[in-house]
Length: 191
Image (cartoon, rainbow, N blue to C red; front, side, top):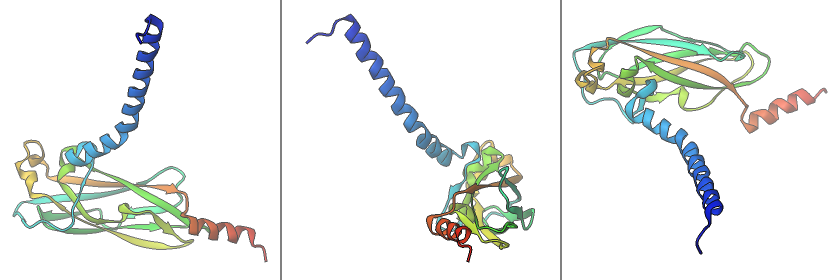
């Protein structure tokens, strides 16, 4: 069956809408994958273990902390910078404190600056991989274990980087179900 002019136009328009919807749906995971692979936008890598190669060249890593407006926690790096050899495993801590009278859940997002170093900054373990729940008045120190990949010295742009800044921003998120039920029970229990 051949389509006449208006029917053909409708089919073409519906096809365009479906293709555009599919591209919009796929763009977020594709962009996330692209950033992880290339280090674009300061995205970092994740490694199972530290580097096998440690160079004599050192690099300074600075630590930065911020929080979303409305996030009630206090959040800061325990130390503001460290110098380590490229390929050497580093361990840094961030401190979070919940000054409220209720449990608060948070999730950290992160990036690395300059962006050219993002693909060479590898985390082995990080508090940012999981959501965090702090009880009222709780103070915790959260570790991040990392190294700078020795391949950074072979990158035409990143090899000139002498300082990397690792930044975290904490966002308040909904409490996990178990915590939310406990919190709601405490608010409704007046006995």
